[in-house]
Length: 303
Image 1 (cartoon, rainbow, N blue to C red):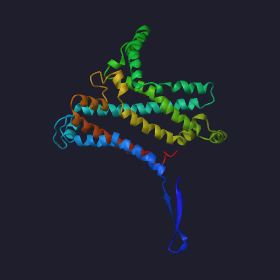
Image 2 (image 1 turned 45 degrees about the vertical axis):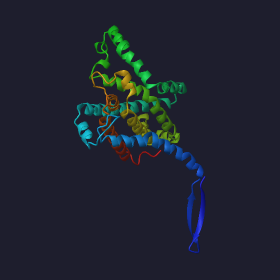
Image 3 (image 1 turned 180 degrees about the vertical axis):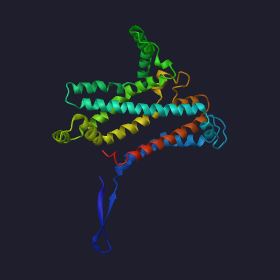
């Protein structure tokens, strides 16, 4: 650990200055991680931002064209549609996942039978690959659900929602939530288990019912965990890719194409510099959203 040395200054033994010496072992673990992070993430990001001001297609010669790519991105309907879908999908999914996961966490921390076994069952989806989950649910939405709808005489279910441009996003939200709820659930369970039981006993003596305890005691005390889940959720859903590819591949048409899909497909078709400008805009917007979230929840995110 660090050593502290006291230095007597000015000949007065009462005036002391403390300095901390960092142990070399810290640098031994720090520098390799910093170097790898810089080479794998920071440097490629800086290079990409640089080429967003050019007409490069990824190989060969290129020239500087200034903000032309950025101006074109702001007026590109495909880009704007992708942004709207991505942010709308992220907002709806964050709300759905956190509400369901919190309610499940409350139930799984209550005095019920087999709660340990139920916790194990509920976290199974988080260990399955997203693309595998997407293909399984695609089969269910395209075959099993319409067959069940026909057998039960429910017209709404006879047609797959994945083939409906107005409802395909709902299927993506359902599958994404199904995979995301376990991780969010575990964080909420940790938060609920950290709440002292004496608080509830005192509230019960004061006449508070279960609903009042949930709203006025539990929620305020786990607000830090809510903040964590919301921020992590937005970060993950803004980068949604594999589940969307497996379910709809961006369709029908381009109705469920996320911004990540748009950028990657642009790379595949030679729009390297143009899509790097889009990625840079996406990065800036994501940073702004994160800062707004942290600012709005400041003072309530301390665990």
